[in-house]
Length: 434
Image 1 (tube, rainbow, N blue to C red):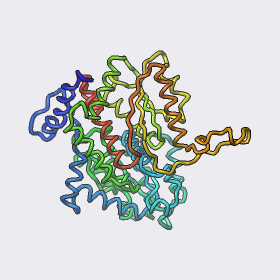
Image 2: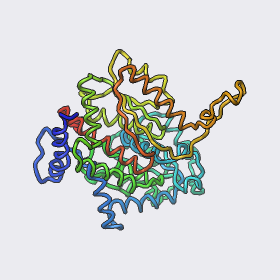
Image 3: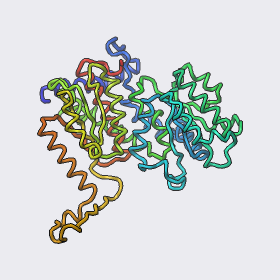
Image 4: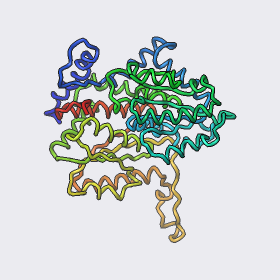
């Protein structure tokens, strides 16, 4: 770690200064860095600064206005997009919303719409099931807000996605009673302004377009409009998400390697992969709200590091899948690297565990057992599993979050994106070329 310090500091300066100038066109980018898709790094601070300067026409202002109008009209939203985009949205939804958000009443949801995901597969039954839920079988105009629904389409550039979009648009027209203006109000499209799909989408009635930024790859789009539009519809505080990400970016650019959490995590991951020849990376989450973070990180690592990186990445939930962990790290005698995601505090009050003391006299049951909470039990189980993994000489790294909220989640995803770029550069890989 100490010997890597100067290398890490140089990489940090390169990402924070030289790369930014290359993306701005101030200096030419060498072929080895193309494509250069690092806009995610400064995007949070730029979005916040633009909104602070202009509360009417900035991108965030337009986003908030469009989502406010849409959520007031519908009770369900279908988010269409490729898996990478949808996993990012699910990460924000599961990390910030109630665990069973879609099952709550409209009042309990604060009049926010339920969210459903489609387009990332050609599964006939799943698509038909969602259309049935949306009332497609009635083929009539909705009679109230509880029957009205809308669409958020993210980068629908592939032929498969366009075909699926047309299916849902046909059903939406029935739900709107054939009113083309109402269809237009209930569809939001996130796409590149230069995309060849802009004109065909407008012809289909999708005229409310929100632009994706340049120099941004899909795995790094979680805090762009692709993730922020659905997040805003869910009532997630997108300002806090961006503030958390901005804080990590500022820390990354202005902190030396010895105290830089982004560089430390990248260095640990790089050294473990290189020196211990690890071929598998497990993300072990200790709060189910973070499970989608693990799945999103799997896609990020695979897309960025490719076949030359830790490709066999998978996610487990610590307490739910605890019986798999010791076995998983020894599969085929293959060294594994575990990344633990831990929250120091839970959003809800701790539940006290109920113990059956009928088989033992009350005096023989320790007072600490009577007072144990579910949070205590999880902490005990985590220590137990960590000790077992240490006994197996298993490499572990732990990222600890204060809690699962917007600010912490914004920090976490920005940390993981920056660390993945640094890890790729340490290995001589362009993380945006896969």
